[in-house]
Length: 546
Image (cartoon, rainbow, N blue to C red; front, side, top):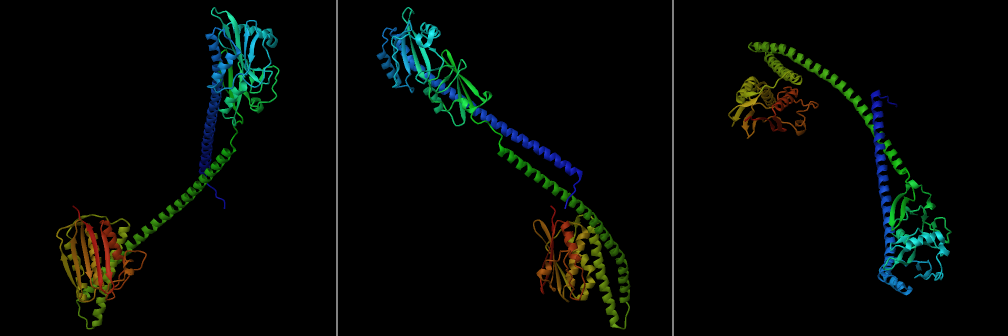
Protein backbone atom coordinates (compact mmCIF):
# COMPACT_ATOMS: atom_id res chain seq x y z
CA UNK A 1 0.00 0.00 0.00
CA UNK A 2 1.52 3.31 -1.06
CA UNK A 3 1.76 6.15 1.41
CA UNK A 4 1.53 9.75 0.31
CA UNK A 5 3.48 12.00 2.63
CA UNK A 6 2.97 15.74 3.03
CA UNK A 7 5.33 17.89 0.94
CA UNK A 8 7.33 18.92 3.99
CA UNK A 9 8.46 15.34 4.50
CA UNK A 10 9.82 15.10 0.94
CA UNK A 11 11.60 18.41 1.44
CA UNK A 12 13.16 17.28 4.73
CA UNK A 13 14.25 13.96 3.19
CA UNK A 14 15.82 15.73 0.19
CA UNK A 15 17.73 18.14 2.44
CA UNK A 16 18.95 15.30 4.66
CA UNK A 17 20.00 13.28 1.60
CA UNK A 18 22.00 16.23 0.23
CA UNK A 19 23.61 16.94 3.60
CA UNK A 20 24.51 13.27 3.99
CA UNK A 21 25.98 13.14 0.47
CA UNK A 22 28.08 16.25 1.17
CA UNK A 23 29.21 14.85 4.52
CA UNK A 24 30.23 11.52 2.98
CA UNK A 25 31.98 13.32 0.11
CA UNK A 26 33.90 15.45 2.61
CA UNK A 27 34.84 12.38 4.66
CA UNK A 28 35.99 10.35 1.65
CA UNK A 29 37.85 13.36 0.24
CA UNK A 30 39.54 13.88 3.60
CA UNK A 31 40.54 10.21 3.75
CA UNK A 32 41.83 10.33 0.16
CA UNK A 33 43.76 13.52 0.89
CA UNK A 34 45.28 11.99 4.01
CA UNK A 35 46.26 8.91 2.02
CA UNK A 36 47.87 11.08 -0.64
CA UNK A 37 49.75 13.05 2.00
CA UNK A 38 50.91 9.84 3.67
CA UNK A 39 51.88 8.42 0.30
CA UNK A 40 53.92 11.54 -0.52
CA UNK A 41 55.64 11.47 2.90
CA UNK A 42 56.61 7.83 2.32
CA UNK A 43 57.89 8.70 -1.17
CA UNK A 44 59.93 11.63 0.13
CA UNK A 45 61.43 9.47 2.88
CA UNK A 46 62.34 6.76 0.37
CA UNK A 47 64.02 9.36 -1.87
CA UNK A 48 65.99 10.92 0.97
CA UNK A 49 67.02 7.45 2.10
CA UNK A 50 68.31 6.61 -1.39
CA UNK A 51 70.19 9.94 -1.60
CA UNK A 52 71.71 9.31 1.83
CA UNK A 53 72.89 5.83 0.85
CA UNK A 54 74.37 7.12 -2.43
CA UNK A 55 76.15 9.98 -0.63
CA UNK A 56 77.52 7.55 1.98
CA UNK A 57 78.76 5.14 -0.70
CA UNK A 58 80.46 7.95 -2.64
CA UNK A 59 82.05 9.27 0.54
CA UNK A 60 83.47 5.84 1.28
CA UNK A 61 84.99 5.71 -2.20
CA UNK A 62 86.41 9.21 -1.71
CA UNK A 63 87.86 8.18 1.66
CA UNK A 64 89.71 5.33 -0.05
CA UNK A 65 91.24 7.66 -2.64
CA UNK A 66 92.00 10.23 0.07
CA UNK A 67 94.37 7.69 1.65
CA UNK A 68 96.35 7.52 -1.59
CA UNK A 69 96.34 11.31 -1.87
CA UNK A 70 97.61 11.71 1.69
CA UNK A 71 100.45 9.25 1.03
CA UNK A 72 101.45 11.09 -2.18
CA UNK A 73 101.46 14.46 -0.43
CA UNK A 74 103.58 13.18 2.46
CA UNK A 75 106.21 11.74 0.07
CA UNK A 76 106.00 14.79 -2.29
CA UNK A 77 105.42 12.32 -5.06
CA UNK A 78 108.94 11.00 -4.90
CA UNK A 79 108.08 7.44 -3.93
CA UNK A 80 105.26 6.58 -6.29
CA UNK A 81 105.45 2.83 -6.72
CA UNK A 82 102.76 0.41 -7.65
CA UNK A 83 103.67 -1.90 -4.74
CA UNK A 84 103.36 0.90 -2.19
CA UNK A 85 99.93 1.96 -3.48
CA UNK A 86 98.70 -1.65 -3.42
CA UNK A 87 99.92 -2.11 0.15
CA UNK A 88 98.26 1.13 1.22
CA UNK A 89 94.96 0.10 -0.38
CA UNK A 90 95.07 -3.32 1.29
CA UNK A 91 95.40 -1.63 4.66
CA UNK A 92 92.49 0.74 3.99
CA UNK A 93 90.14 -1.86 2.57
CA UNK A 94 90.23 -3.78 5.84
CA UNK A 95 88.22 -0.97 7.49
CA UNK A 96 86.07 0.23 4.55
CA UNK A 97 83.00 -1.61 3.32
CA UNK A 98 83.52 -0.97 -0.39
CA UNK A 99 84.90 -3.01 -3.26
CA UNK A 100 88.35 -1.82 -4.36
CA UNK A 101 88.53 0.58 -7.33
CA UNK A 102 88.39 -0.99 -10.73
CA UNK A 103 91.68 0.65 -11.74
CA UNK A 104 94.37 2.96 -10.37
CA UNK A 105 96.75 4.77 -12.72
CA UNK A 106 99.70 7.13 -12.38
CA UNK A 107 100.51 9.36 -15.38
CA UNK A 108 103.27 11.90 -15.84
CA UNK A 109 102.91 15.42 -17.16
CA UNK A 110 103.02 14.10 -20.73
CA UNK A 111 100.02 11.91 -19.95
CA UNK A 112 102.05 8.73 -20.27
CA UNK A 113 101.04 5.80 -18.04
CA UNK A 114 103.75 5.09 -15.46
CA UNK A 115 101.74 2.21 -13.98
CA UNK A 116 98.15 0.98 -14.18
CA UNK A 117 96.72 -1.84 -12.08
CA UNK A 118 93.57 -3.31 -10.53
CA UNK A 119 93.10 -5.18 -7.29
CA UNK A 120 90.48 -7.45 -8.81
CA UNK A 121 90.81 -10.64 -10.72
CA UNK A 122 89.80 -8.89 -13.91
CA UNK A 123 92.97 -8.29 -15.93
CA UNK A 124 93.64 -4.87 -17.48
CA UNK A 125 95.49 -4.11 -20.63
CA UNK A 126 99.15 -3.26 -20.06
CA UNK A 127 99.05 0.52 -20.50
CA UNK A 128 102.49 1.28 -19.06
CA UNK A 129 104.26 3.63 -21.47
CA UNK A 130 101.04 4.29 -23.38
CA UNK A 131 99.81 7.84 -23.98
CA UNK A 132 96.35 8.63 -22.60
CA UNK A 133 95.61 10.65 -25.72
CA UNK A 134 95.13 7.43 -27.66
CA UNK A 135 92.24 6.59 -25.33
CA UNK A 136 90.47 9.89 -24.62
CA UNK A 137 91.62 12.13 -27.47
CA UNK A 138 92.81 15.74 -27.38
CA UNK A 139 89.65 17.06 -25.73
CA UNK A 140 90.14 14.63 -22.89
CA UNK A 141 93.80 15.61 -22.56
CA UNK A 142 92.71 19.22 -22.03
CA UNK A 143 90.73 18.07 -18.98
CA UNK A 144 93.70 16.10 -17.72
CA UNK A 145 95.93 19.18 -18.04
CA UNK A 146 93.55 20.96 -15.69
CA UNK A 147 93.51 17.98 -13.31
CA UNK A 148 97.27 17.70 -12.82
CA UNK A 149 97.71 21.39 -11.98
CA UNK A 150 95.62 21.07 -8.74
CA UNK A 151 95.85 18.95 -5.66
CA UNK A 152 92.04 19.00 -5.38
CA UNK A 153 89.93 16.03 -6.33
CA UNK A 154 88.41 16.10 -9.75
CA UNK A 155 85.54 13.79 -10.64
CA UNK A 156 84.28 12.90 -14.09
CA UNK A 157 80.80 11.87 -15.17
CA UNK A 158 79.99 8.14 -15.20
CA UNK A 159 81.42 6.49 -18.28
CA UNK A 160 81.10 3.15 -20.10
CA UNK A 161 84.26 1.08 -19.74
CA UNK A 162 85.57 -1.38 -22.29
CA UNK A 163 85.29 -4.11 -19.67
CA UNK A 164 81.49 -3.71 -19.64
CA UNK A 165 81.25 -1.66 -16.44
CA UNK A 166 80.05 1.83 -15.64
CA UNK A 167 83.03 3.64 -14.15
CA UNK A 168 83.27 6.74 -11.95
CA UNK A 169 86.69 8.44 -12.46
CA UNK A 170 88.16 10.40 -9.56
CA UNK A 171 91.66 11.88 -9.63
CA UNK A 172 94.02 14.55 -8.26
CA UNK A 173 97.24 16.30 -9.37
CA UNK A 174 100.70 15.64 -7.92
CA UNK A 175 102.76 18.78 -7.23
CA UNK A 176 106.26 19.14 -5.78
CA UNK A 177 107.40 21.62 -3.12
CA UNK A 178 107.32 24.47 -5.62
CA UNK A 179 103.83 23.54 -6.79
CA UNK A 180 105.25 22.28 -10.05
CA UNK A 181 103.15 19.49 -11.56
CA UNK A 182 104.75 16.07 -11.49
CA UNK A 183 101.80 14.15 -12.87
CA UNK A 184 98.47 12.88 -11.60
CA UNK A 185 96.68 9.89 -10.10
CA UNK A 186 93.37 8.79 -11.55
CA UNK A 187 91.15 6.06 -10.11
CA UNK A 188 88.08 4.49 -11.64
CA UNK A 189 85.48 2.88 -9.36
CA UNK A 190 82.81 0.55 -10.67
CA UNK A 191 79.48 2.30 -10.19
CA UNK A 192 77.43 -0.93 -9.79
CA UNK A 193 78.58 -1.67 -6.19
CA UNK A 194 78.01 1.96 -5.23
CA UNK A 195 74.41 1.86 -6.49
CA UNK A 196 73.93 -1.65 -5.10
CA UNK A 197 74.39 -0.24 -1.62
CA UNK A 198 71.44 2.05 -2.31
CA UNK A 199 69.23 -0.82 -3.46
CA UNK A 200 70.14 -2.95 -0.44
CA UNK A 201 68.84 -0.32 1.98
CA UNK A 202 65.70 0.93 0.23
CA UNK A 203 62.28 -0.45 -0.72
CA UNK A 204 62.59 -1.80 -4.29
CA UNK A 205 59.19 -3.48 -4.22
CA UNK A 206 57.21 -0.22 -4.19
CA UNK A 207 59.62 2.39 -5.55
CA UNK A 208 61.68 2.99 -8.67
CA UNK A 209 64.95 4.97 -8.45
CA UNK A 210 66.40 7.17 -11.17
CA UNK A 211 70.09 8.21 -11.20
CA UNK A 212 71.22 11.20 -13.23
CA UNK A 213 74.56 12.99 -13.64
CA UNK A 214 74.80 16.75 -13.40
CA UNK A 215 75.09 17.04 -17.19
CA UNK A 216 71.65 15.44 -17.58
CA UNK A 217 72.79 11.93 -18.56
CA UNK A 218 71.16 8.97 -16.87
CA UNK A 219 73.03 5.90 -15.64
CA UNK A 220 72.30 2.66 -13.84
CA UNK A 221 74.32 -0.32 -12.69
CA UNK A 222 74.88 -1.61 -16.24
CA UNK A 223 75.49 1.42 -18.48
CA UNK A 224 75.73 5.20 -18.75
CA UNK A 225 73.26 6.72 -21.19
CA UNK A 226 75.59 9.44 -22.47
CA UNK A 227 75.89 8.56 -26.14
CA UNK A 228 79.08 6.52 -25.68
CA UNK A 229 79.48 3.04 -26.98
CA UNK A 230 78.21 0.59 -24.37
CA UNK A 231 80.08 -2.63 -23.76
CA UNK A 232 77.73 -4.02 -21.11
CA UNK A 233 76.11 -7.34 -21.95
CA UNK A 234 73.42 -7.21 -19.25
CA UNK A 235 70.53 -4.90 -18.45
CA UNK A 236 69.67 -3.37 -15.07
CA UNK A 237 66.11 -4.61 -14.25
CA UNK A 238 65.58 -1.56 -12.02
CA UNK A 239 66.26 0.96 -14.80
CA UNK A 240 63.56 3.61 -14.39
CA UNK A 241 62.49 3.68 -18.03
CA UNK A 242 61.30 0.08 -17.71
CA UNK A 243 58.31 1.38 -15.67
CA UNK A 244 57.05 4.22 -17.91
CA UNK A 245 56.44 6.66 -15.06
CA UNK A 246 55.82 10.35 -15.92
CA UNK A 247 58.51 12.80 -14.81
CA UNK A 248 56.10 14.80 -12.62
CA UNK A 249 55.60 11.81 -10.33
CA UNK A 250 59.27 11.75 -9.27
CA UNK A 251 60.71 13.36 -6.14
CA UNK A 252 64.37 14.34 -6.46
CA UNK A 253 67.37 15.06 -4.22
CA UNK A 254 70.79 16.37 -5.32
CA UNK A 255 73.97 14.64 -4.08
CA UNK A 256 77.20 16.63 -4.28
CA UNK A 257 80.48 14.87 -5.10
CA UNK A 258 83.33 17.39 -5.36
CA UNK A 259 82.96 19.18 -8.70
CA UNK A 260 80.05 16.95 -9.81
CA UNK A 261 76.40 16.61 -8.88
CA UNK A 262 74.25 13.54 -8.99
CA UNK A 263 70.47 13.66 -8.87
CA UNK A 264 68.57 10.81 -7.22
CA UNK A 265 64.86 10.65 -8.08
CA UNK A 266 62.20 8.32 -6.66
CA UNK A 267 58.67 7.44 -7.75
CA UNK A 268 56.08 4.80 -6.99
CA UNK A 269 56.16 1.85 -9.34
CA UNK A 270 52.38 1.69 -9.26
CA UNK A 271 50.39 4.93 -9.34
CA UNK A 272 47.70 5.45 -6.74
CA UNK A 273 44.36 4.26 -7.97
CA UNK A 274 40.92 5.26 -6.86
CA UNK A 275 39.90 2.79 -4.21
CA UNK A 276 36.89 0.81 -5.41
CA UNK A 277 36.52 -0.53 -1.88
CA UNK A 278 36.16 3.01 -0.51
CA UNK A 279 33.61 3.88 -3.20
CA UNK A 280 31.54 0.77 -2.52
CA UNK A 281 31.79 1.28 1.24
CA UNK A 282 30.74 4.93 0.95
CA UNK A 283 27.82 3.97 -1.29
CA UNK A 284 26.67 1.29 1.15
CA UNK A 285 26.92 3.75 4.06
CA UNK A 286 25.02 6.37 2.06
CA UNK A 287 22.23 3.98 1.18
CA UNK A 288 22.11 2.69 4.78
CA UNK A 289 21.87 6.22 6.17
CA UNK A 290 19.19 7.16 3.63
CA UNK A 291 17.27 4.02 4.55
CA UNK A 292 17.56 4.83 8.26
CA UNK A 293 16.44 8.44 7.68
CA UNK A 294 13.52 7.22 5.57
CA UNK A 295 12.60 4.81 8.37
CA UNK A 296 12.73 7.64 10.93
CA UNK A 297 10.63 9.91 8.72
CA UNK A 298 8.03 7.17 8.21
CA UNK A 299 7.98 6.46 11.95
CA UNK A 300 7.66 10.16 12.73
CA UNK A 301 4.84 10.45 10.19
CA UNK A 302 3.08 7.45 11.72
CA UNK A 303 3.61 8.77 15.25
CA UNK A 304 2.39 12.21 14.22
CA UNK A 305 -0.77 10.74 12.77
CA UNK A 306 -1.28 8.57 15.84
CA UNK A 307 -0.61 11.55 18.07
CA UNK A 308 -3.23 13.57 16.24
CA UNK A 309 -5.69 10.68 16.48
CA UNK A 310 -4.93 10.22 20.18
CA UNK A 311 -5.25 13.96 20.77
CA UNK A 312 -8.63 13.93 19.04
CA UNK A 313 -9.69 10.87 21.01
CA UNK A 314 -8.49 12.44 24.26
CA UNK A 315 -10.42 15.58 23.46
CA UNK A 316 -13.51 13.53 22.70
CA UNK A 317 -12.93 11.44 25.84
CA UNK A 318 -12.49 14.56 27.95
CA UNK A 319 -15.74 15.91 26.58
CA UNK A 320 -17.48 12.60 27.35
CA UNK A 321 -16.01 12.47 30.86
CA UNK A 322 -17.01 16.07 31.47
CA UNK A 323 -20.50 15.29 30.21
CA UNK A 324 -20.66 12.18 32.39
CA UNK A 325 -19.46 14.03 35.47
CA UNK A 326 -21.86 16.84 34.82
CA UNK A 327 -24.65 14.31 34.37
CA UNK A 328 -23.71 12.57 37.64
CA UNK A 329 -23.61 15.89 39.42
CA UNK A 330 -27.04 16.90 38.11
CA UNK A 331 -28.57 13.51 38.81
CA UNK A 332 -27.08 13.29 42.32
CA UNK A 333 -28.12 16.82 43.14
CA UNK A 334 -31.61 16.52 41.72
CA UNK A 335 -32.29 13.15 43.36
CA UNK A 336 -30.96 14.14 46.75
CA UNK A 337 -33.63 16.77 47.39
CA UNK A 338 -36.65 14.52 46.88
CA UNK A 339 -35.01 11.71 48.86
CA UNK A 340 -34.41 14.10 51.75
CA UNK A 341 -38.11 15.03 51.59
CA UNK A 342 -39.02 11.34 51.64
CA UNK A 343 -36.94 10.78 54.76
CA UNK A 344 -38.59 13.76 56.43
CA UNK A 345 -42.05 12.37 55.63
CA UNK A 346 -40.98 8.96 56.93
CA UNK A 347 -39.78 10.54 60.17
CA UNK A 348 -43.23 12.13 60.55
CA UNK A 349 -44.96 8.83 59.84
CA UNK A 350 -42.80 7.01 62.39
CA UNK A 351 -44.28 9.24 65.09
CA UNK A 352 -47.73 7.87 64.28
CA UNK A 353 -49.00 4.66 65.81
CA UNK A 354 -49.93 1.93 63.36
CA UNK A 355 -52.06 -1.03 64.20
CA UNK A 356 -50.03 -3.20 61.87
CA UNK A 357 -46.41 -3.96 62.77
CA UNK A 358 -45.85 -4.68 59.11
CA UNK A 359 -46.55 -1.08 58.24
CA UNK A 360 -43.97 0.14 60.78
CA UNK A 361 -41.42 -2.30 59.37
CA UNK A 362 -42.07 -1.05 55.83
CA UNK A 363 -41.57 2.54 56.97
CA UNK A 364 -38.24 1.59 58.66
CA UNK A 365 -37.13 -0.23 55.52
CA UNK A 366 -38.02 2.74 53.33
CA UNK A 367 -36.10 5.06 55.65
CA UNK A 368 -32.97 2.83 55.51
CA UNK A 369 -33.14 2.59 51.73
CA UNK A 370 -33.58 6.33 51.43
CA UNK A 371 -30.66 7.09 53.74
CA UNK A 372 -28.44 4.59 51.84
CA UNK A 373 -29.46 6.23 48.59
CA UNK A 374 -28.63 9.67 49.97
CA UNK A 375 -25.24 8.37 51.13
CA UNK A 376 -24.63 6.96 47.67
CA UNK A 377 -25.69 10.20 46.03
CA UNK A 378 -23.44 12.18 48.37
CA UNK A 379 -20.47 10.01 47.40
CA UNK A 380 -21.38 10.20 43.72
CA UNK A 381 -21.74 13.96 43.91
CA UNK A 382 -18.40 14.37 45.63
CA UNK A 383 -16.74 11.96 43.19
CA UNK A 384 -17.99 13.92 40.19
CA UNK A 385 -16.83 17.18 41.78
CA UNK A 386 -13.43 15.66 42.52
CA UNK A 387 -13.11 14.48 38.92
CA UNK A 388 -14.07 17.85 37.51
CA UNK A 389 -11.81 19.74 39.88
CA UNK A 390 -14.69 21.46 41.68
CA UNK A 391 -13.50 20.29 45.10
CA UNK A 392 -10.63 22.42 46.33
CA UNK A 393 -8.16 21.18 48.88
CA UNK A 394 -8.27 23.63 51.79
CA UNK A 395 -6.17 22.32 54.71
CA UNK A 396 -6.69 23.76 58.16
CA UNK A 397 -5.91 22.56 61.74
CA UNK A 398 -8.54 19.92 62.57
CA UNK A 399 -9.88 18.54 65.83
CA UNK A 400 -10.03 14.96 64.61
CA UNK A 401 -11.75 13.72 67.75
CA UNK A 402 -14.61 16.22 67.42
CA UNK A 403 -15.08 15.34 63.74
CA UNK A 404 -15.21 11.64 64.59
CA UNK A 405 -17.83 12.21 67.32
CA UNK A 406 -19.95 14.25 64.92
CA UNK A 407 -19.95 11.38 62.41
CA UNK A 408 -20.89 8.92 65.16
CA UNK A 409 -23.91 11.11 65.94
CA UNK A 410 -24.89 11.03 62.25
CA UNK A 411 -25.11 7.23 62.45
CA UNK A 412 -26.56 7.04 65.97
CA UNK A 413 -29.88 5.71 64.66
CA UNK A 414 -28.14 2.93 62.65
CA UNK A 415 -26.01 2.02 65.66
CA UNK A 416 -29.09 1.79 67.90
CA UNK A 417 -30.96 -0.39 65.43
CA UNK A 418 -28.14 -2.98 65.39
CA UNK A 419 -27.22 -2.57 69.04
CA UNK A 420 -23.62 -1.65 68.17
CA UNK A 421 -21.36 0.24 70.55
CA UNK A 422 -18.51 2.47 69.37
CA UNK A 423 -15.45 2.72 71.58
CA UNK A 424 -13.00 5.58 71.09
CA UNK A 425 -9.38 4.99 72.11
CA UNK A 426 -6.92 7.84 71.69
CA UNK A 427 -3.31 8.37 72.69
CA UNK A 428 -3.18 11.43 70.50
CA UNK A 429 -3.97 14.89 71.73
CA UNK A 430 -3.70 17.73 69.32
CA UNK A 431 -4.79 18.75 65.87
CA UNK A 432 -4.13 17.46 62.40
CA UNK A 433 -3.82 19.62 59.32
CA UNK A 434 -6.28 18.63 56.63
CA UNK A 435 -9.39 19.46 54.65
CA UNK A 436 -12.35 19.22 57.03
CA UNK A 437 -14.94 18.13 54.48
CA UNK A 438 -12.66 15.48 52.97
CA UNK A 439 -11.63 14.00 56.32
CA UNK A 440 -15.24 14.01 57.55
CA UNK A 441 -16.29 12.17 54.38
CA UNK A 442 -13.54 9.58 54.86
CA UNK A 443 -14.48 8.93 58.51
CA UNK A 444 -18.18 8.82 57.65
CA UNK A 445 -17.66 6.24 54.89
CA UNK A 446 -15.37 4.07 57.01
CA UNK A 447 -17.84 4.17 59.92
CA UNK A 448 -20.75 3.41 57.59
CA UNK A 449 -18.93 0.32 56.25
CA UNK A 450 -18.05 -0.85 59.78
CA UNK A 451 -21.71 -0.58 60.84
CA UNK A 452 -22.95 -2.22 57.65
CA UNK A 453 -20.75 -5.33 57.98
CA UNK A 454 -20.95 -5.67 61.79
CA UNK A 455 -23.27 -8.13 63.42
CA UNK A 456 -25.92 -7.07 65.92
CA UNK A 457 -24.61 -6.13 69.36
CA UNK A 458 -20.98 -5.97 68.14
CA UNK A 459 -18.37 -3.38 69.15
CA UNK A 460 -16.58 -1.01 66.77
CA UNK A 461 -13.23 0.33 68.01
CA UNK A 462 -11.86 3.62 66.72
CA UNK A 463 -8.25 4.38 67.66
CA UNK A 464 -6.05 7.47 67.22
CA UNK A 465 -2.27 7.28 67.45
CA UNK A 466 0.80 8.91 66.08
CA UNK A 467 4.37 8.13 65.08
CA UNK A 468 7.25 10.54 64.72
CA UNK A 469 5.95 11.84 61.40
CA UNK A 470 2.38 10.54 60.91
CA UNK A 471 -1.07 10.59 62.53
CA UNK A 472 -2.92 7.26 62.28
CA UNK A 473 -6.71 6.69 62.34
CA UNK A 474 -7.98 3.11 62.48
CA UNK A 475 -11.47 1.66 62.76
CA UNK A 476 -11.93 -2.01 63.57
CA UNK A 477 -15.04 -4.18 63.43
CA UNK A 478 -15.67 -7.85 64.19
CA UNK A 479 -17.98 -8.33 61.23
CA UNK A 480 -18.09 -10.62 58.23
CA UNK A 481 -14.68 -9.55 56.84
CA UNK A 482 -13.61 -10.35 53.28
CA UNK A 483 -11.27 -12.54 51.25
CA UNK A 484 -7.85 -11.33 49.97
CA UNK A 485 -9.09 -11.53 46.39
CA UNK A 486 -12.01 -9.22 47.17
CA UNK A 487 -9.84 -6.90 49.33
CA UNK A 488 -7.37 -6.33 46.46
CA UNK A 489 -10.20 -5.04 44.27
CA UNK A 490 -11.48 -2.40 46.71
CA UNK A 491 -9.69 0.60 45.15
CA UNK A 492 -10.22 -0.41 41.49
CA UNK A 493 -12.81 1.31 39.34
CA UNK A 494 -12.80 -1.56 36.86
CA UNK A 495 -13.62 -4.28 39.39
CA UNK A 496 -16.99 -5.07 41.03
CA UNK A 497 -16.77 -4.70 44.83
CA UNK A 498 -20.41 -4.58 45.89
CA UNK A 499 -21.13 -6.61 49.05
CA UNK A 500 -24.32 -6.60 51.13
CA UNK A 501 -24.25 -5.89 54.84
CA UNK A 502 -25.36 -8.16 57.67
CA UNK A 503 -28.94 -6.83 57.29
CA UNK A 504 -28.74 -6.83 53.51
CA UNK A 505 -27.66 -3.21 53.47
CA UNK A 506 -26.68 -2.19 49.94
CA UNK A 507 -23.48 -0.43 48.86
CA UNK A 508 -21.87 0.82 45.64
CA UNK A 509 -18.17 0.32 46.36
CA UNK A 510 -17.61 3.97 45.49
CA UNK A 511 -17.12 5.08 49.11
CA UNK A 512 -13.69 3.48 49.63
CA UNK A 513 -12.44 4.70 46.22
CA UNK A 514 -13.48 8.23 47.18
CA UNK A 515 -11.78 7.84 50.58
CA UNK A 516 -8.59 6.67 48.93
CA UNK A 517 -8.49 9.69 46.59
CA UNK A 518 -9.12 12.12 49.48
CA UNK A 519 -6.34 10.57 51.60
CA UNK A 520 -3.93 10.71 48.60
CA UNK A 521 -4.74 14.40 48.28
CA UNK A 522 -3.43 14.75 51.86
CA UNK A 523 -0.24 12.81 50.91
CA UNK A 524 -1.47 10.07 53.22
CA UNK A 525 -2.11 6.36 52.82
CA UNK A 526 -5.29 4.25 53.19
CA UNK A 527 -5.06 0.52 53.87
CA UNK A 528 -7.56 -2.26 54.54
CA UNK A 529 -6.77 -5.40 56.54
CA UNK A 530 -9.42 -8.11 56.68
CA UNK A 531 -9.99 -11.79 57.24
CA UNK A 532 -13.18 -13.48 56.21
CA UNK A 533 -15.45 -14.15 59.19
CA UNK A 534 -13.22 -12.24 61.64
CA UNK A 535 -13.68 -8.59 60.77
CA UNK A 536 -11.88 -5.69 59.10
CA UNK A 537 -9.46 -2.93 60.12
CA UNK A 538 -9.43 0.22 57.97
CA UNK A 539 -6.51 2.58 58.59
CA UNK A 540 -5.44 5.89 57.12
CA UNK A 541 -2.40 8.00 57.91
CA UNK A 542 -1.89 11.72 57.59
CA UNK A 543 1.53 13.43 57.71
CA UNK A 544 2.07 15.64 60.76
CA UNK A 545 3.21 19.16 60.07
CA UNK A 546 6.09 20.52 62.17
